[in-house]
Length: 505
Ligand SMILES: Nc1ncnc2c1ncn2[C@@H]1O[C@H](COP(=O)(O)OP(=O)(O)O)[C@@H](O)[C@H]1O
Ligand SMILES: [Mg+2]
Image 1 (cartoon, rainbow, N blue to C red):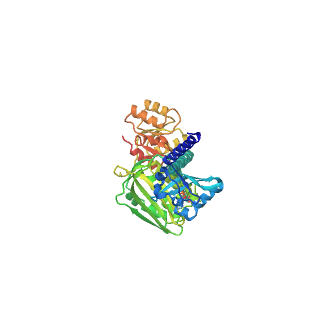
Image 2 (cartoon, rainbow, N blue to C red):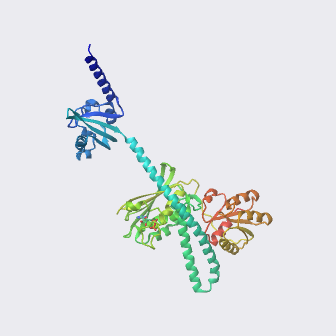
Image 3 (cartoon, rainbow, N blue to C red):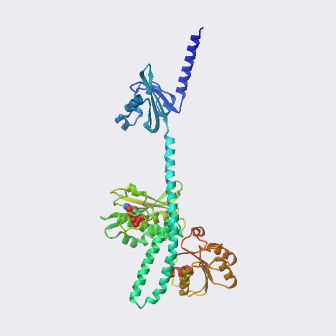
C-alpha cells in the first residue's frame, strides 16, 4: 500500500465525481465534440433541453442542433473555426430541439487541447427562451410606457392651449351674435360677419380635436348603434371621401352597441375616412367594417367592438408610423393637413376606454382599427331641442368679464334676467339674499370653491335649484359626469337654450 496507490484512487474518485456532476447538471447541456464536431459525450441537461437520449445523439454531428438556414450558411463549422482561432466561441441564437421546436440558446464552445493537439470541443448550451421572452416583454412595456408618457406630456400642453383658445372663441362667437343683429340690412357687414362665423366654427372644431387629444373633452358616453349612426351620417362620410373614392360597408348584423360620446365618435370616423381618401389620390375603396371582439389583454379586457377603416392607398412609411398620432404631425402640404385628425381619434378612443391600432403596408394600404367598449344600455334617442323662450332670473357665475359679457348677452336674448357674480362665494351670498330661478356657473374659477363644489353645495342647501355648468374643458367634468348637466364652451345660443330647457325643475 503505497502513496502512489492512494493518489491514484483519489484521482479516480475525483474524476468519477466530476463526471457525475457533469452528467447530473440538468440546467445546462454540457457535452464534448470531437475535432470534427461529432458528439462524444452527453449529459442529462442536453437530454432535457434538446430532447435526445445519449444513444440517439452520440456519434452524430452537432450541426443538427442548428436551424436549417444556419446549416445551409455553414454556421456550425464557422463556430468551431472561431473557437479554435480565438480560444472561445460565444453566441445567443435559435437552436432546434429533437421534436423540431425552436429554443433561444446561449452557447459557449471551448477548444480542448492535450499536449498541444486539439482533441475536441467542450460545449455548453443553456435554454434562455424564457429569459429572452421576459426581456422582450419588458422592452415592449418600456416602449409602451415611454409612448404614454409622451402622449401625456403632449396632452398637457395642447389641453392648456385649447382651453385658453376656447375662451377666446367664446367671446368671438358670442359677440358675433350681437353684430349679426345689426348687420341684417348691410350686405357688406353681413358677408363679414358670416366669414367670422365660419372661421370661428372652424376654430372651434380644431380646438375640439385638440381637447379630445388631450382627453379633456367633457364627454357624454352613451350606447351607440353603429349601423344606425353610420346610416345617419352617411351623407357626411360620402362628402368626405369625394367622388373618386368608393365607400363600402361591412358591418356584422349582430354588432354590439358601442359606449362612447356620439359626436366625438362621428368626428373620429370622419377623420379616418378623410385620411383614407387622401391616401388614394388615384381613387380606390374605403371599407368601414365593424365586428365584435372579446379581449383578454391588459388593460383591455372584456367585450369590445372593433371598427376598421381600411384603404388601398399609399401606406405609411415605418419612420412616419411612430408619429402619426402626435398633434400637428402631418405629411400633407400646408393648408391641406392640420395634423389633428389622428390626434382626435387617439384621444377619443382612449378616453372612451378603448384604443386605436394601425396596420400599414407601403403601396398596399392602411387599416386603422378603433376598439371601443361594448355599451350595455339600449341606444337612446337624442332629446330634441325645440325652440325655447325662457323667463325668470338666472345667476351667472363667471370670473372672466369678457366671457361674462357674452353669456349675459345670450341669456338676455333668451329672455332671462341675469345677475352676475365672479366667484362661488359671492354666488352663495347672492342666493342667500335674493332668490334666483337657476344658476349657470363656469366650472374652473379662481378662489377656494370651483363651479363643481358650488353645485354640490347648492344641491345640499337648495335641493330644488336647477344648476347648469359650463366649461372649456375640465378634468373635473369627467368626475361629475351625470351629476350635473355640463355645457361645452364655446356654445351657441341654441345649445344654451337646449341645455336650459333640459334642466330638471
Ligand atoms: N390612411 C392613411 N394612409 C396613409 N397615411 C396616413 C393615413 N392616415 C394618416 N396618415 C398619415 O398620418 C398623418 C397624420 O394624419 P392626421 O393626424 O389625420 O393629420 P392630417 O390628415 O391633417 O395630415 C398624415 O399626414 C399622413 O401622413
Ligand atoms: Mg387627417
